[in-house]
Length: 283
Image (cartoon, rainbow, N blue to C red):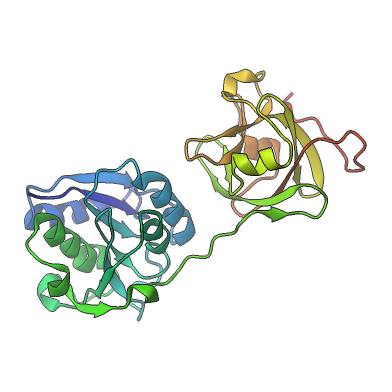
């Protein structure tokens, strides 16, 4: 019985690269279903893609994960297949696989994809998604090869980690977090969770103070975008279970100076704070 392949990359859709990877898989394992998780991640942004994998994996059918965001392609960085309780994961050893593997329970076996029998011969070294990763994913999904046949075993503990920021106290009664992701709607997901806000004394239905670049803004903690007026700022728990800053019918990253890796402080509002408070409603 074949396994599905969930495929993520930064290849975009303007060129033939995604289609070629699909084609390689179809030639080697025509019975295997491929699910496109996403291909428009910023070029070479390993962190953005790794976080997307963590958000997505619990909703994907168990099978093979094929992830290719590989700014070091052609260098001495390793190409790996790792075995996890969820299923095999194939991709570059640059931090991309480590968070999602840890999320599903960790890797107990890893191999370097150096077996020539499972590579497509090529003069170039810039399309390992086609030449190395796709064939490995295809034969694992179809059962045509075992992990041990794909290459040299490596210590799973040696997989390159991806260091992600953790929220921490800001020293003034708040919690310092960071924007992890801005989605296409302008919503800003942070590394702060709802329990972190509750620990500050904040609660759903009440206002939360948001400090960005030294300027404080106030927004209610609500459930739905429509719980505030058009264009108004809000705080909510997003689909990944994280605290996000959003705007009803607008973009939070236009109302506030938010981008990936922007520092954000959340506090329970205190009316006598000395920080300037600006309105967060569009004109």
